[in-house]
Image (cartoon, rainbow, N blue to C red; front, side, top):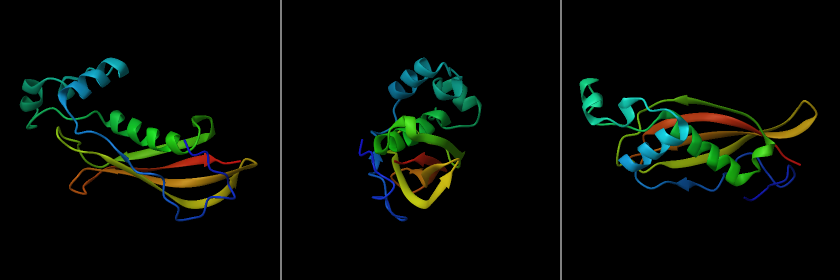
Length: 139
């Protein structure tokens, strides 16, 4: 964790990119167990095919967790004030997910100096899977 200060951060600064290993079935099964989300579309090939998908695919909340990991790798979790995302694409098996973030605003919220960060996850083909933003208080 870098633990940046309000003074040291500038608009346009980027967070260190987080690259995950290719999505595989074991990863999805482990996340299903950890999260309690056992929806068969994420772990049962037959179910996914009956639903019109070529195979199982990652949980949206797994992708959001990776973006959360990006943010909390940059600043302590205790400084995270808001975190919102929009799910924009399916993360398929074999996708290598890259999580990125960029400081887009410095502001004061409820007496705290904060930065607003745009975050995004893309696969190895540059397709956006999740986009959103976070508000982080900096000292």
